[in-house]
Image: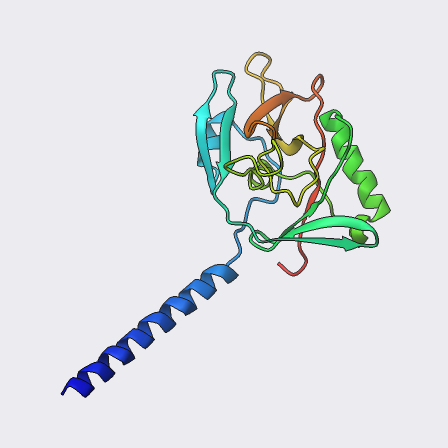
Length: 207
């Protein structure tokens, strides 16, 4: 009787751990899909962005926050061009990006020029959406004083996204969202007067 009971317990335990291991493996293989296209993004939708935590709201309609995504980064070099693959999201990032602060319009041209050169053999680089840029924000300082993984270059401390916004005063499309890795800050900026850097992204062809 004791032997039968022990055998039963061993079988049940084995099934339980096998099931847990399979579920864990499936979870690991499941990619997180983030919005890949730009849009006019109102302030009211910021808190609805998936996979982020908003720690604090500011009066000037900016936010402190971080990503909840557990990344699986892989640094790679293709034709002397450095990239970072995030297997968790299926995104491929330029490891660095622009070294100068530039306007939003110039940022788009910068990416177009990058595509003409075929950086890392690809010509489908673009400005990230706010969702994609936010996915890089860590909950604490990891890259010296920056809220981003050390696999990335530190020069691009604040980057443009392709998501725009409307100014309350003029009701014109004169704002774009940016992410600042020095402070873990999400803010909207005047596209005519303000300058940010660029960290281009593309979707992995194996995604």
